[in-house]
Length: 169
Image (cartoon, rainbow, N blue to C red):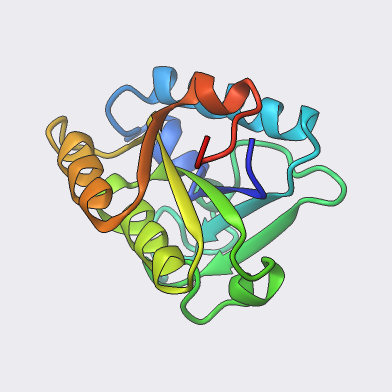
């Protein structure tokens, strides 16, 4: 699998009505399989949760702010207010230096992109899982994958990580 799985903004306001991302059911199922594979492989899981401003669907305490997946014992929740989950949080200190990270979640062009680039800047190897990130514009995920690939992120199918492979293998 990898050294850690970062589930970015896998929150109710992104995957459930009234305004889910495009392909929410398909993406949600893939995220669930990826999470179960990480748990089975005993890979540390970090649930990164966006804390939106007052009145937004992801305002802390609102129904949309809640995570889709139940957090299990030993898993960490990192609350953030920036697109890069490393900015203004303890995520960098919680991860081992140089850890290999699998990134998945919402939204492709904002928090997924920002967190993947932030991880690269901090010396992590990063894999972005194709089909395990989404947004509201159908053209965006492929464009983000291309940008991140050019920056040094491995863009891979989830089956590769569900089977236990590491980003460099």
